[in-house]
Amino acid sequence: MHHSLGVASEKARTLSVTLTSTRFDSGKKEWQTPETTHVTFDATAHSARIDYDRVGEAPAGMALWPTFILFNGKETVQYNPTVNKYRRAKGGLKADLDQMLGTESAVLLIRGYVNREAKQGSDATIDRRKMITKEFDTGAPLGFPDKHPSYLLRYYIDAETNLLRRRTELVWRDNAWQEIVHLDFTKWVLNAPVKPSLFAWKPPKGATMFVPPVTEQPKLLADGTIAPDFTCIGSDGKPMKLSDLRGKTVILDFWATWCGPCQASMPHLDRIYKQVKDKDVVVLALCVRDDKAPYEAWRLAKKNTYSFPVAFDPAGKTGKSEPYTLYKVSLIPTQYVIDKEGKIAAGSLGYGGEDDHRLEIALAKLGVLVPAEAKTATK
Image 1 (cartoon, helix red, strand yellow):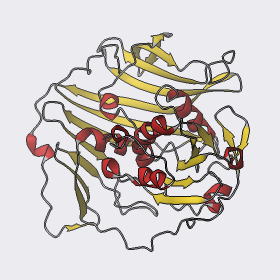
Image 2 (image 1 turned 135 degrees about the horizontal axis):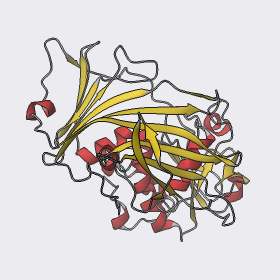
Image 3 (image 1 turned 135 degrees about the vertical axis):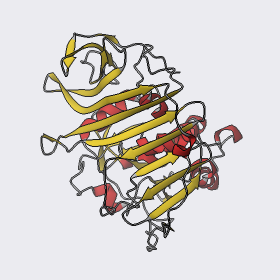
């Protein structure tokens, strides 16, 4: 359950706001180019529209690179005018927003949510305006009660308008708090009329449906293959090997903090894990192709959300990941089920939402039955 400090935007019927996100690249030791989006939200109509400050064709590795995405409670529409192509899909507002923004609380995010448990911080100014600051930390790292908290959210609230102006994410590194993400909120407009046409869309003349290029389906390790061993960093910060889990059924899940589909799949994985953890089944959720700072921030922020164990690939974003190569991972999430003898029982690519029961089917083949209530994936 989420609790807010009651900022002015919390209960607005409609709102629009510009979000500017800037991330710190820990590898290059510099701030990346800011990314700007404009959000319009209508709580009554269960609709939202996200307009991106970008143009052009999709960069390598990106699908459509839309300039806007709209959700109207019935479908999701994405459109790129440069190539005059679009995508449409049925889906609910919350699930689509959460996956697109990479958070399980996207609607709260665009409402300017401030955690109720945040404590008073020092006064500050932004653009010569007085700010009230609030700070929310996650507590000491898991297993290290005597350590300093490792992840902090700092909110800057405009003292006059009572609207969130900035949210920063900080990690504890080298005996000091270091900022890793700035998210600025500007151009707030609350409770103004919103034209329904903003959430309706018809393909312009000549527009065609975007069809992803046909590529050969990546081949995962074959069933019956001995699962390759590798070393990673466990949630306790110590090195561990996959072979340490021999004798148990292992669900090996490849994911990253920046991966929307990975985040969308985790409530389902957690529900399954809770149902089978007493049946000699363990989860190793391995964060790959990611930086250590966002991984640690995610781990601490989610310590009371998910119960399954997580681990970090020490190769980070270098592209020299041993497990990524050994397990022929080409996209994430990728998931394997490994039997008690250390052999691949099943492998799967991606996450298909609430109707994706490949994990349950794979476990059933090994004699591990999942209760019916656990088979419904989180929307």
